[in-house]
View 1 (cartoon, rainbow, N blue to C red):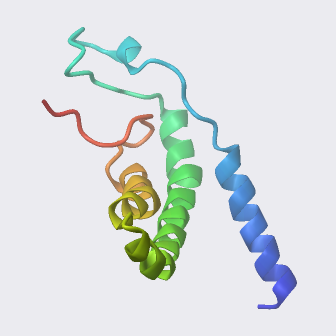
View 2 (view 1 turned 90 degrees about the horizontal axis):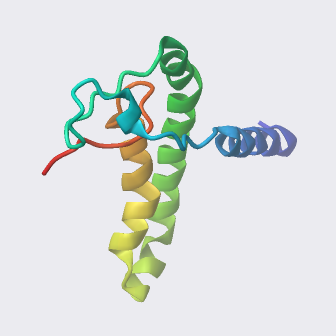
Length: 113
């Protein structure tokens, strides 16, 4: 792959990740039980489809790129003493958004006490 194609792929991934809109709606409005601790987030099919086709592949790419960046920056972060923060920001957060979020949901992870 020549330099122009590689640059075009990186630019497309960057623009794609920045174009994913942040969901600002409150998840409590979709609650069936009314309990704020246990909320059933049941997004419509178009959000699930968009998440499956667009967001998950982009988030998987961000997780892979973040992992590579973490490995490259590991000697410097070890010297600076912030390995945990770098790992959280570059690997764990994108991984949670990719693998631990329900399809079409806006929040990552499980709600636990």
